[in-house]
Length: 291
Image 1 (spheres, rainbow, N blue to C red):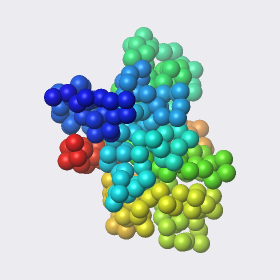
Image 2: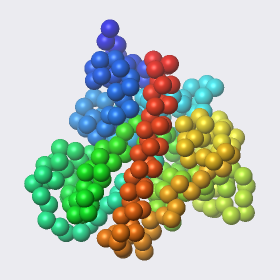
Image 3: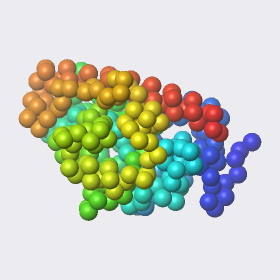
């Protein structure tokens, strides 16, 4: 039976109705679904913002709340009312596409690539940059792999919820992508571990952000946090591991045409794809138990 929707539907009803409509009730279909396809739909409405963002859609937010919100869960205060842009919690995309693979080179864009971008770009503003990026990697026989990863990185296994309370003009979501860590999620966890452990090497701004958001997570250390959020692939026992080292840096990216960078990019795609797939399996298994 198709779940009935009310003016204020519960997260469970939002997810169940979408899965029924899209996958005939098979929750496993959600593992592979690209959230860019939600643009302009009921499930793609974004919280606290008029701009479309895959990790802030109604469907994504419902999944965060069902998996991690409520008493006894990792985010006791997480609800549909307080998740979204400018709210106490915000969805985040873990493994970046643009920082590692993005290219601004002015290249001739083939009709096939132009057609693919028109159909698959998650945001209208993405189209020009995505056309350049796919064209760049296509010169080296990697266009198809990069295109597949663009779709993959907009799937549920690459989304996580983070506390979103401001410290000055900064949030965790914003800060992790705007510093020397360059949006690498493993580096973020390594720095977060320093905060949790009280290391003398902890980042001062990250420590302040963590203090401002301390009440959001009902976990006392990084291993507990990683286990609850299905981040185990980033961990080596009690400590986070440097999965993507050596990292892409501004200097390294200047040699984006080098064989060394192409090897790095393919390793990044392979590693991130495995993490996203493994995590989606765990998330959908848990969702099936809750629906």
